[in-house]
Length: 72
Image (cartoon, rainbow, N blue to C red; front, side, top):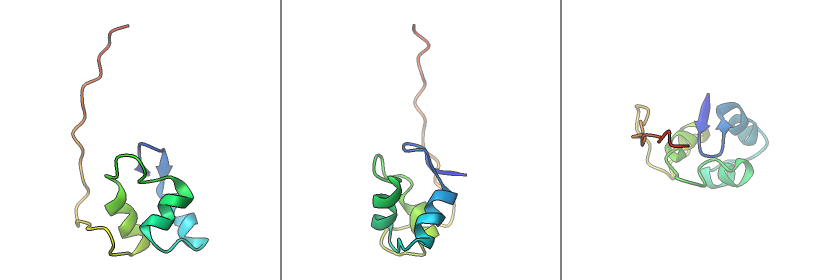
């Protein structure tokens, strides 16, 4: 499952970074690039890390998507 859509990072890549020693959200961000653009995935990264440095909610966060124009 993709955790960071901006950078195309999935949960598997984040878990690999954690298994290789990343132990905070900022370290996962540095290793994978996840969370470095809009930041909306940082609470999910924090849940995967088991870290409290970013406030996270128990329910998934939904982002409002802007319509894409079809003008060519």
